[in-house]
Length: 128
Length: 133
Image (cartoon, rainbow over all chains, first blue to last red; front, side, top):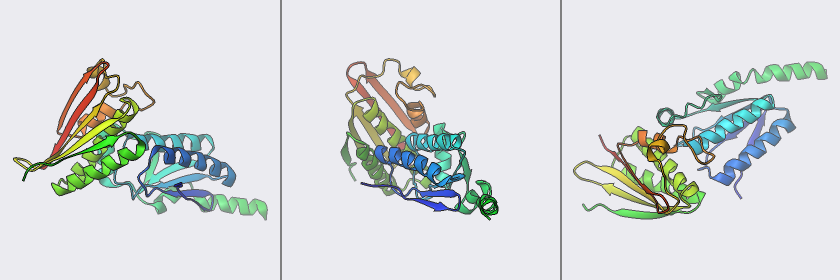
């Protein structure tokens, strides 16, 4: 069975979507991410979609759902790497993805999540 | 060169992925621009999903047209419950399922040609095309 790996970087989770998503895979990703956010006390979720050639309303809804759930769990979601032609198509489709933060690349996305290092520093200070 | 039609079943989520892949191949063959390819594939994905979710599955006929204008035409056919009010169904935000309701109206904006024919109790046929410019 396919799963999408979720990498932990500091207090952020990184997901790279590389395959054509189908229903079960999208549902599993939402479940896995939700659990990992709590487990890792993640402050943010970075979803890299640079490999996706299209984003239809199904994937758009998945991204919006992940953003809503993570917000309730006190984590920001940033979608990074959207291709220009995908952005043009999404707007025409009527899916502006309200509530989903975006960044051009993973580096900017990490910065947007609110200084992963800042949170780590704070934890270190408490631990020490 | 005669146009070739390929018929694909739409009965599962995997079938939607296959429809997208075949449409991409055809769109590349007739040299649609990247943005036009992306719009056509996205529209095809929306309509295939409609056929699966609301039409209880169906078929997609994918056709390459070479003359007078190169392009790709796709016909989606389902034998579902049909759509009673097409005008309403084309309105953004309208949905009878769990979708966002962007499916039909959104797909129409992404293509050059869009025709829909639906009979309550018999099913729905949607034909879309995107032409090379």
